[in-house]
Length: 143
Image 1 (cartoon, helix red, strand yellow):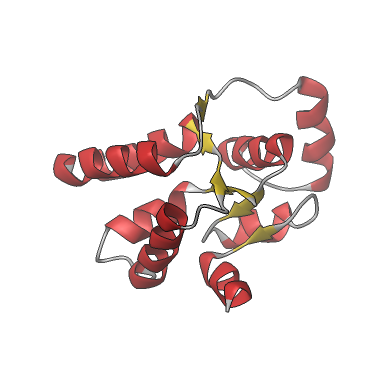
Image 2: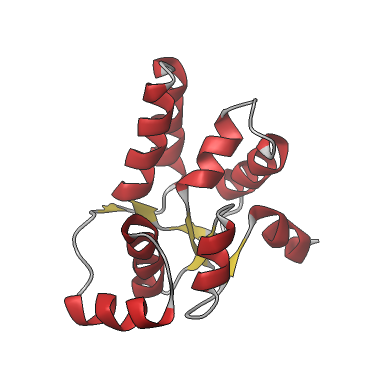
């Protein structure tokens, strides 16, 4: 199964002060250890995570997350690139998302991947186009 994981999940997993940290950590360990999951890497996601960590002056965690992400991703990390303009316009008529969230959603859509995020608006709006779940919903489905 292909999945693209939004930055909100990685930030939550690697920052212990986040309210969903333990669920996110459990989810990330499944990502790392389940060979049936194909993790779609997207450069925008890792840049968002690193931005949050570095704004907190947490370069140690930022380096760790970079290594974790590189090992967890199946294959190459997709460059940001721009989704075809027509696809962006069509999706914008159906979902109400900020540009960065729309690009993450469209990358998952383009790759035929399920999107996993803690961002409630991204999951809710994304479900209008494709499968989207929170990490908790994903773990519940595995049980």
